[in-house]
Image (cartoon, rainbow, N blue to C red; front, side, top):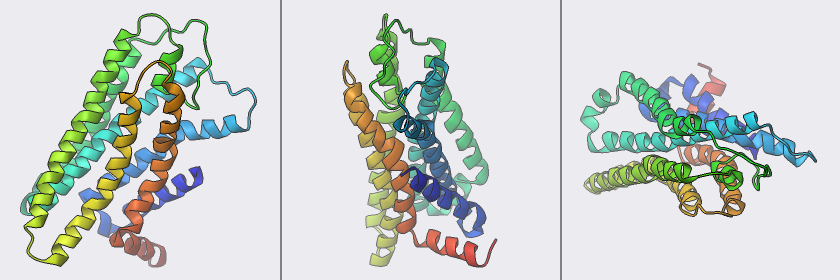
Length: 274
């Protein structure tokens, strides 16, 4: 599965970079999504593979905290990126005449910087500002240093972290879901006004892949973090496998197999060259 993640996301990144035809904001953000999926999976899966063939299965405290911080940063960035991709589709379908002005390359670069900076401030700064305290228990019922798993073995007053999880969840889960739903209500409303059946079909096809990815991603995280409680980490590790292994492996397949432009661009790059 990890090899599939590397090959699938590498295929999309390679195709978008080396095909001038795909140098558009939509594929630029898709390339960013593939990069984030590759990084998210690489935060935990290589360590999991090592632990499978190891008897000790140990990780240092610094390594564990580092893994958690990067997971939070990448997860938060991906959540906001999915909103940006929905907004991009909204502009392309509902305001096509203004698309090149609103989604210029300058704006795309600013959005990319804002994604990373915003996720860092909201998702990682609170954790870094007030590190967790551990007493005696140091065994995680998890394959990765997930924040819920670490809270299971942390000691002292955990109210700050529980409030932080709710606040971060509002920023990276509930707000994105609301914005995506509103965007697609407007998109569907505009699509239904298109007179030709072929035009409606093409518009729906460009949005369906994103909707599938969004559904898998947010349903998994909502199930994990809405069920946070003592002892929940035992179940959370199975949900973690979905976004750490399954989602990064499936996303490239959804976007490439359902996208004629990507497949044609890939074969053109491979046969003709840049």
